[in-house]
Image (cartoon, rainbow, N blue to C red; front, side):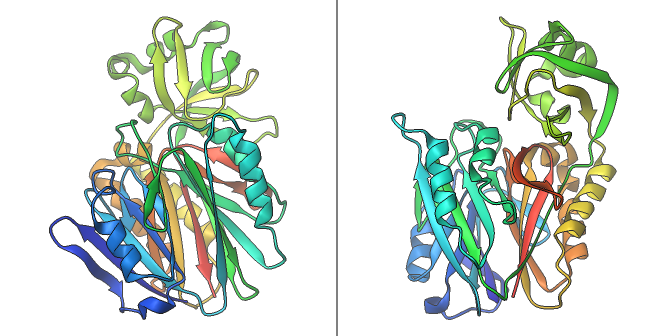
Length: 374
């Protein structure tokens, strides 16, 4: 595997950040993540012209990741030449007349081949049920699916995916990675602290929670948050819910919106009735340690050159502020200097809970990543 990493800004255009310039004709894949204010500029077209034979995939972000640094107001791209591996790409666009999740499942199944090693999923971050998307892409007990919901710098207005230099809203992209010599690893971990007592979701519908322990959900949230309740729903990013699903797997759900009229809370993933729940709060040191745990899970025992694609939740970045890069530094230290990092801050992460739980799940507030080596 050979790789080169680039950054685009409106002042400098594309510049090489790491690696050596590769033969543009030999690049099979370019992964690109873009700040929403840059995605409509000339950079994507220039990237497509520079790498005419490559599949160019990515999307808008709530912060771009290149190496151990997160940035805004730019685009980051990693160009990859595989020596022994190949990729296949699918895209499904949302259509009111069709079931998007059936279409996604069909596309995911179309990727299944004997040498498939991993499926990466990139999706619209606002107009799709992430929990159902995770179910739709879970088409194999042995092939991990890892990815995320695209962002828009926390504006929650419009997100995009990128395919071959063009942007698409309301769409899902699947990338299959193939090769007998391709080694993959994946990891997902949070590091948030639970507090309070166990409670039960007593009334909910999909991702909207109306009652917790038979009391209005919004009232309970305000009681727990105290003065922080004055800045809901944005302050809710710092106080997610922990829920335990029907399989006993703990998941985190991030608050997206509140409804004063119905005293309800809207989360970034389904919260089924009957779930046991706890409020959570963040501690920067624990989040950084959690990122290290995720990286340990994703580490592949090899000295070969590699690439890690990192998907971290926007809520983590908001909580850690200027210390957000610390979690990326830890990931880089764990994976080693032979592994290049790229990725984005997301509105939701897609990954198996662990190697023992193979189905893809929607996560919030986690550090999620996968690594590729030949």
